Length: 288
Image (tube, rainbow, N blue to C red; front, side, top):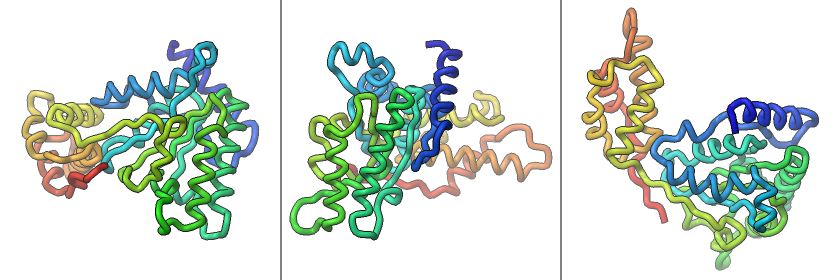
């Protein structure tokens, strides 16, 4: 599909969204896979499992396949949210991004009602616009394990409501993407077939991936010439750093150059080194 037709599709989806008021903040994501660094395999899997079934419904119906709901698992800062937004942007369909605070309530029965309202509206949006994508960040807060006697009755109601819609309460043109860094806290039923039945695991980047990330983020600002920028030194200085940590370092260096130099032209290497030394990264996380 050409960029022109993609833009036209995006405009049509946004126009259809704007024709009425919605309870949730639906939009058409401007991100796409071109903004993803070093995760081609994950992009390919999301395309085949999530994106193509909702963007090519005639073929999906002919072969009786539907979009797989996908769970993104990994430490904070490893790009789960960014990849989900990019996947939503690739569909050129409306998407909504929510977290536990958008659904959970202290009022009796309200959390379960909020979950039902979200998915009912999702089906309405899909009916109007031809499909929809829901991204649920920190989904472990909404689908906590119900085992034993520790689960609060209100939590169990929310889990039951979510699992009902994930199993058979959503249109085939709806895709749901969840993200968590605490997979062990999820109710086991959440990852059964027909719910979040595809899992993509994220890890902290290795040396090659950190090298690509530094180059990508430095290319976005007026940095020194590539042969003057000691990328290998930066890579050695940042073991166990997440993509978000690296982006923060480059942004910090750019701010040093922009505001601490009388007539700034480029980001010098020394400012990147200073930025790396000034940042406390999240560090490795244990993911089950």
